[in-house]
Image 1: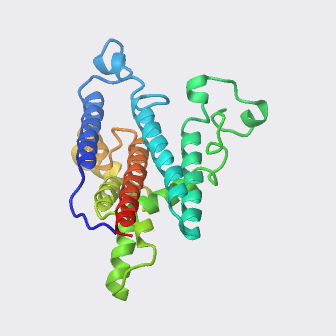
Image 2 (image 1 turned 90 degrees about the vertical axis):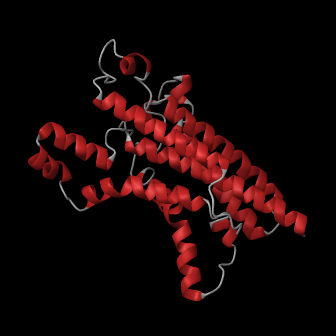
Length: 258
């Protein structure tokens, strides 16, 4: 594993980008410039910012696409069978992620959903993830665990067993990926705890501060003033691109050494 304890330049740019997205969400939610307000700046220019084929989703697609290209490239370059198998599986996963994000092109090409899919797809779209949680929440949960806890797994393993993990460079090719994991955990934890443990934070804050201020505090804490799921998916996409860049760098360094 490459021992880099600082974020790379691309990560710094991405962190700034996330802050700007939060600012956009806050401004359009709480300044009176709501996206459904006719004639407002947000309503006119940012109406589809978080929606299908909008700015955030398109950014995700671009990030995943380049991650997929790097994954295919590295599956050719790495020589060990286990390495190739892992990269083949990763490429298939990224291809599925990309295809489902685009509804396999339907979001941009606007073709009609076949009737047999319309009858089982809850949004009448040409994809699998709106058919069953097996194709949606299960893969999403796996991706969340990978992106959030890979660095913790490596850290705990080393602390407990006092040795490195075999093929550790495939789990965490660079330590600076942990910064993305920490951000993902931080932005997800309040909403997760509120939802899974029925904390009823909304009622708690509204009872203390009143409906208007209580709701604002609740949404700021849980990040429900933006589309949190899309925000998380954007971090997923960037994580995979950063992961592939780190793995590519690992390959280039080890090839020179060997």
